[in-house]
Image 1 (cartoon, rainbow, N blue to C red):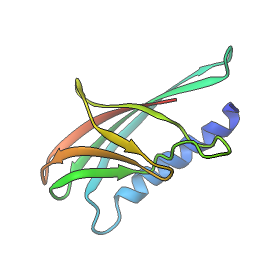
Image 2: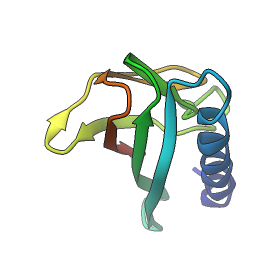
Image 3: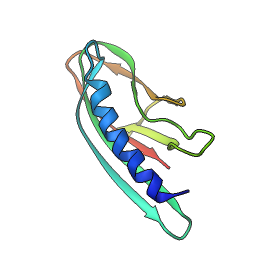
Image 4: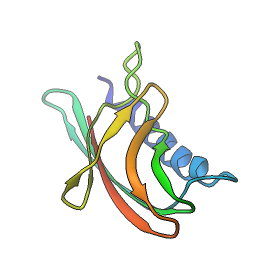
Length: 117
């Protein structure tokens, strides 16, 4: 894994996360996000934790974030868990997006912790 490649990947994720969620007709409005990244030079791995706070603009059973799983070239990150407080959330990660199953009520705010490697 090339660490120098992954840093631009995270920057593009941060930009796309905020931009994609703000389009007209969006289900969510991203209020805040923060990343913590751990780099291990001994085994050339990166582990990431993202805290994402969203406000639901309408009732929703799920929502998606641009967080692609690794493709054939190895670009992307594998999501290992999604939590809301101490609750494990159901999720599915495709090649283009991470979809999280929720019970979002219009106007409610929720913070999700997404771990990936």
